[in-house]
Image (cartoon, rainbow, N blue to C red; front, side, top):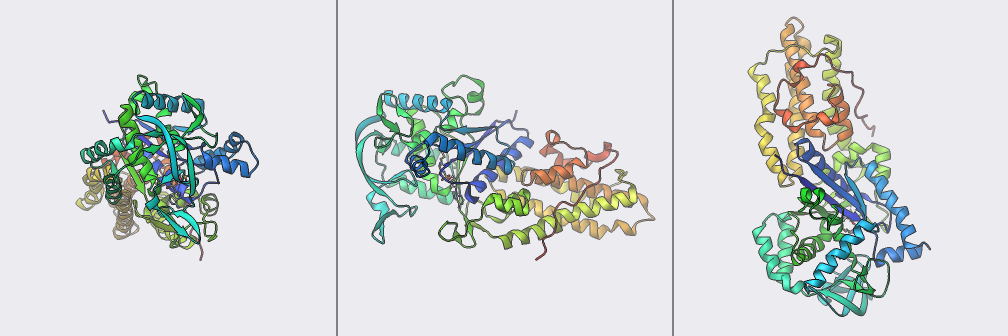
Length: 509
Ligand code: MSP
């Protein structure tokens, strides 16, 4: 039995419309969810919106709306983005839902009962845009304004009664947890950052706010709302119907296999979240992967620089699969990466149109003209077996790499197979074998098998296009099995293939 796989994206703030960074976190998570499904795992893939807190309250005030009405509207844009990105999520959670509030309240009550929470007073810096408390040494002056050194966001001075979580108590247990679970935080470089942050000393964490009301109330004291990050992180549990821990969903999927997040929210996920859970006696997730930023050219996307690439506009212009392919291939996963229209266009032309598109087009057209789209008979030579067996020989390694989230290894493998397949078809030149029909047939058969295998590997990256191609072999989405890349004669029993249109139009520059 394969183990179950629970994967999450961050839940997005509906304070503004979705941008490329959101699309990136989601596409990456969808890649893993789809891959795990075709590997035969039972998958639960969660995304959603993070709707409480001062940031949202202020954004709602600014647009003269009641916060819930405001969230209803923008949450919808994120839900729409999920379909636009072709996410295969099993649920979409909103933190304004009842099921979520009951999970948060329950977790709070446990922490309070276990005396992990106490009432005191907070005085210090707070960034509404990050929804984060910062220490004095994390603040600097910029043109007379105080900002966070970590995020560059403005901070304001806050003094109010507040509940505190005894984070300091969890410093040593956390360090022990990291050393016992060396792959809890990936990539490695980020893990080191977190460990040195924890080693430098953890202070108790303020976990409630009193000066505004948009949030889940502290059950024992309604003057306070629960800190939005304690609220938000709990979404990963509430979507599994926590606190119903004996029910199927929770039993099947908790602890989560992996939270996909951006590097800017690593501290919340890799320090606070496991500390809350350990304190409540709940198992922490197995992994937190902090990916890098998507930059526009070499700069961070920002409204003031006017260099924001809107994912919806890019999809309109170039198509979804082009964007998915670009982000998964061209960004070195874990590091910052950049996107521009020029780069995207070159990638579409060289990889998608010239490599994958070209292979499918040529082979299928040849099969149509010479064999009337019949799947031919075959008699493999050693050379044929060599290229076909490559997939079987590398399968285990690909799986191993992917279990460490080495997306780039995976994509590189697929791209290499594409080059090899194109080269095979060229070198074998079936058009010169018209007087040796068994050889001509075999070359076509091998090429079709290569297209099938590669399309299966491409499915988590570009699901729509790969399905179009797999469809010519009458392979439906539910029939896609990763293991079949090892089979060299999968198409043996298929009689005919279906004609295929152009997959990617080349972009004229
Ligand atoms: N609501 C919190 C997350 C709570 S999870 C329990 C949040 N929301 S966010 O909308 O601000 O950001 C969501 C994700 O988008 C984060 O993982 C963040 O890193 C990612 N990105 C935002 N801008 C980005 C880029 N330019 N590039 C890549 N990802 C970045 O934080």
